[in-house]
Image 1: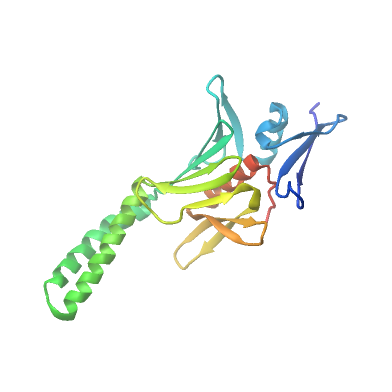
Image 2 (image 1 turned 90 degrees about the vertical axis):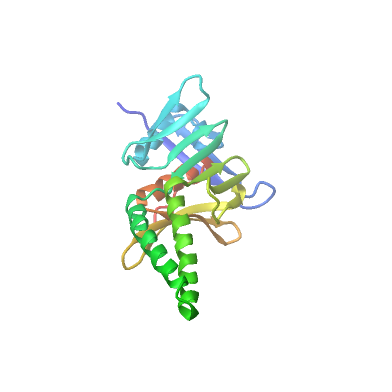
Length: 236
């Protein structure tokens, strides 16, 4: 006979402890207990919770001090690890289809722009502008190959960094200001991608992840951060 657990998320909304969260849990017929995050739950309770969510399963390496979360439904999900109660998520940018498109388009645009620069007059101006655009596309294509976005979540901040090649969009968000994370779909004529936004206590919405190829990638990042911070997911 399986054992039943109950979990409850509590969030302080006022006073000095405003924004802090606690997780209350109990076994069937037992007393309520409290922890600060999902990772502090007893192993059997945490395993039952993650199984009910159907997204990950724990893989603890004894003696290493590292708790890894391994995807069980999608092979191409971001890599997640936890070291000394700090969560790290690595989201690679690599997109094979886009890389192939850049490998075809960039040399062709570079040839046309270089030829136009030598024509003189307004054609040269157009050639210079196209060459600048070609240089940007070449740099972005290189970023798609080597870059990744790292999410770092500790007791104070959610930090978003891109690298190793420089790129815009770095973020540092106090975790006690985060009320909820949500995944959004963006549809264009020829593409669908997903982003993650954080809703803050002051009502503002801050972008955490600009681009993910699939909903599974975005959801895995969203839920890993929520579990670490003890935020109950609000299904849309």
